[in-house]
Image 1 (tube, helix red, strand yellow):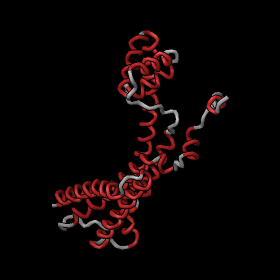
Image 2 (cartoon, one colour; image 1 turned 60 degrees about the vertical axis):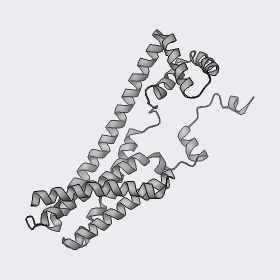
Image 3 (cartoon, rainbow, N blue to C red; image 1 turned 45 degrees about the vertical axis):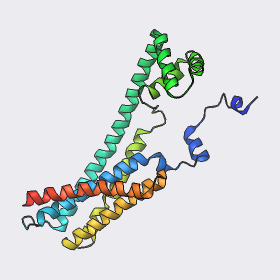
Image 4 (spheres, rainbow, N blue to C red; image 1 turned 180 degrees about the vertical axis):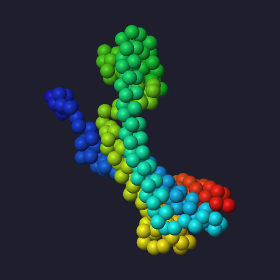
Length: 252
């Protein structure tokens, strides 16, 4: 009996397998939530600081450090909770949509097996299998509608099985990343009075937070460091300039 046959009756724990055999880390597992929450936290909180600074630059609105902290923290935690719950609901919705579409696909396979068989044949052909092999594989898979439905959902609808996703953990990582990175632009206002120097310290802190997030992307993905950093800095800088510009226009 081969090793594959020996494992035939065992349910593979794929998360554990990826961690042990492929050294997948928590950072890689939740990279999307960390980057999404972190970038939005940095930009959203700095938008408060930049908006106030833009308004105050014309002397129309003299905003004290306490006001910056009150508005900044209120925005940080309100948006953090909103982001976390939004990620949770989004993941739950993806689960529901996947199961609904899978049920429809199984129904189609039962009612019109030949049509679905031809669709699967074309999918396999487009994935690079020669016609003869694609026909053989399709014939075998036609006897296993559950596997066939999973393949159709992946390659016809671009949907992956959400069974291993944890909506609560997705939301928690999004919230945690939002709060952790989003608090950085406010740090200078905790340490000293609100003035022009505090604002520029916040600019530097925001840049360093975005740089850290870019380095985090690079570490997790192995992509070119310069690309990861520049993309992150460009997105954050664009949003910050918009926030400052709006504050300046409103203040002026």
